[in-house]
Image (cartoon, rainbow, N blue to C red):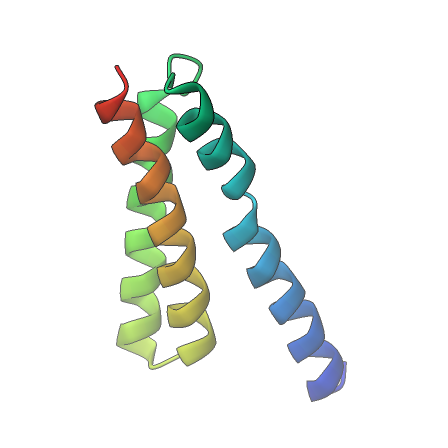
Length: 86
């Protein structure tokens, strides 16, 4: 696979990962209700993104760092709202 194709696929995957949390965040914020969100699932998801970001830092893989750090912010936002709107 060419570098261009790999970068396009990687960028698309990163954007999907990052934006996949937006609908959940918007729903929780509008309704002020996070009862349908699993605390265990989002805790694990946030942990996963922390580990992927750390892996990126350790391997100096900037695309992995950027994508997972952004996804970490989004997932952490959902988790924070879960705690706030209990």
